[in-house]
Amino acid sequence: MTTITDLQIAVLNDNLTEAQSVITHLDRSTEAEIFQKAAEHFGFKTIEHQGRRYAMRNAIATIFGYANESGLRMLCDRYNIEAIPLSRFAQAVRIEIADDLKLSPKDNKTTFIGWEAFLLAAIESSTPKARAVHGYLLKMERAARIAAGAVDLTNPAKTKLTQLAESEKVINMICKVDRIADTVLRQRAAENLDDVLEGALGVTKQPDLFFIAQPE
Image 1 (cartoon, rainbow, N blue to C red):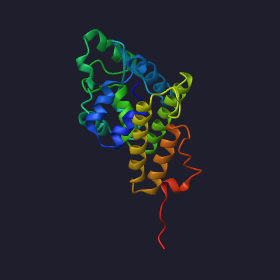
Image 2 (image 1 turned 120 degrees about the horizontal axis):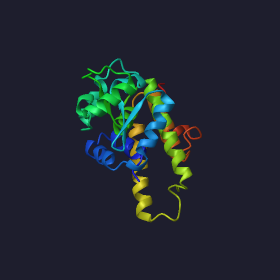
Image 3 (image 1 turned 135 degrees about the horizontal axis):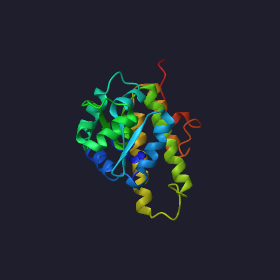
Image 4 (image 1 turned 60 degrees about the vertical axis):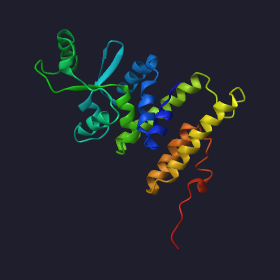
């Protein structure tokens, strides 16, 4: 199953092709439910259309602490993620959406984005609000893995090839984190990574893992 961690690794490695591949293989069966839970947690509305959930791009921009939605628009363009203007929906659907979201019947500017855009914004954005969303999503994913009886990298039930592939991902991510110049951001990234790996790195117990040389 493709996870948020897979997407984060691709983004940190600046691998656009891999990120787009991960997005293509996101678990659509649980997407709507998770997006709705996030919407309820952070206080924005979503709409459901043909089995998928969407949110207004300007509302998501506010959630992530942006002054306007241009940043999200450019993010979607970079990863070739579809953004759907209200005008593209069928007339009956437009009327229903406008009524539900208290939009003007003549609205021709409101644009909607889906779960994948929300995930990328949480991973790529650096605002304090975005970091809060990122942390929330990682905790949700971790809880889902635990609830599903997920196993860790040391579980003998996994094949050696699977263990090696996952270990390689972790190593690449550690290296990427270690190259972050800003010490505060590096520590935060290390803590996030450690949280994803359920404390396997022991960042707080091994401060030399991301050692910061002090000037003499």
